[in-house]
Image (cartoon, rainbow, N blue to C red; front, side):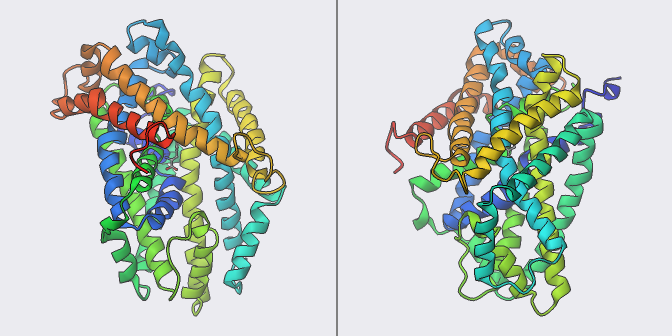
Length: 460
Ligand code: PFF
């Protein structure tokens, strides 16, 4: 029975939760509210959802199709799906490389969230002023040891889970953490909505101001949609290798996209009412929103009831850690799978090797907030360079190439068979999906990508 193969996800639910775990991460709870805050709230969200539906989701389904067709080895998946066209073989290395790059800088921020969880646990926030929070964050993030330590802890935890294997590690981790994550979110939303001025936060989130729509908003919305759904790097190809043959790829893709958007919106419902409950505070604080503004807000709004401030802060940062972990697991797996399957290292050793590389690069990324502030390449510090390389280059190029590959290179019958599970599913949306993958998505991604790099200049 397929379900007993320990290199595959044992159940359909496990497959959805693992993919959703990869998608739901710091991108939803940290990056999304920050981007929405910086771009005027609802107008950003609306455009984000459009990109999600018409670009990111079809690319996700494409990744699923490539991965599952590859059957347990993502590096061979492209070659196999192309019917042996060897030129496409090198695309199989995409997840191997991008996994290392994305985890190296993601783990730095994930490490910050772990440190803030620890601070919340030992009640380190109480009695601090807003100036204290700002100064403490700058001091912590620019320190040469502390953030490196917490980054290494996150990578080690990730390594432990990946080393356990597909079913016992990745699937079980997702099955435990995803429901908990939802529970925490619901409790936090319920608390946040009872705060004074919660209505202002809701209005900010749901009342679109179209005067805010400009080129930079469109670019950010597309980048956010790709990052949030984990598409373009081959991460979902890797997971889809472990999908059973009876998984409905279209439906699963839609479920993951819905879960991901829901979590992003709910995170907004935690954060914006909280921010608006303090007179004079604005939600456009940028990246420090989660590490400076929010801990301060939690102390102030629940200040009269210390245990509530304690609990709210702790749950919030725990939520961030779990979201980060389910994503970092997928990042490590992308590269570790190659060392395990192609280079034949035992799985735990493969996970350790990749983790050590990520810890080394992660250290450079972390230092770029402190001692290595002035060390730049192409005008960027390590953290920004890695982020640029992954989110602005590999994601759009990877997404574009996958669309071209599946839309134009792969035999249409092979694609249809994969999407419809050999004709056993009706998949009425298949023609629309194919149209998007062949025309809309490649042209749209190319235009936006070219604009972002300054090759075209129509969105500025
Ligand atoms: N989707 C994740 C998030 O929203 O935090 C980030 C991510 C995971 C990006 C896996 C890329 C990836 F391959």
